Amino acid sequence: MREPTSARWRLLRAGIFALVATQLAALGHVMGGGRLPDPATLLTIGVFLGGSLSGLCTSKRGGPQIFAALVASQLLFHLAFQVTLHHTEPVDAGRMLMFHLFSALAAAWLMTGGESTLFRLFAALHRVIAAPPSTPAAVELAPAWVAVVTDGGQVVRLRAGALSLPSRRGPPLPA
Image (cartoon, rainbow, N blue to C red; front, top):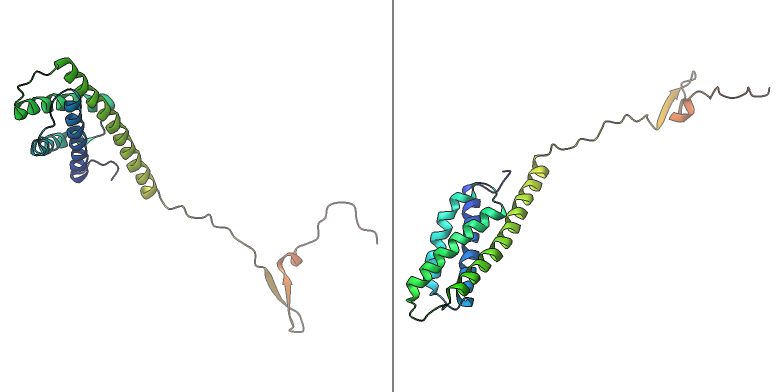
């Protein structure tokens, strides 16, 4: 497998995306002046988000794509939080928008790094696993010892280098 795009990996990546987006949306909502959403609401919206985003995990996504998906999810989270929390107190819309956008930006930064790291890891593993095993080059070695049988039937062991001819370079040896 070259990339983490099988069904299991898509669900895992979408689940992590939904978990991070849900937690940061709740944090952004509280920091923006809203109340903390009910855990059941967070779980329901997170599962819905993860399931709906698994189709986007068919390939590697870049920062702008992740940020766009997170901005859309932040808007959906905000609307769901507004409906389920039955806000009667006024909330500063500008502040709420700023913190939801900050949450989307922070999550996009985290997820883009994670996405890039995951795909690089899979590429490295693929190179290691798919690389043909390197076979050492065949090296022919001369035998270390040579046995020579003399006329008298005696076996004499000589070093392989001892059988080489003397060098013919240089002036002749004095007689």
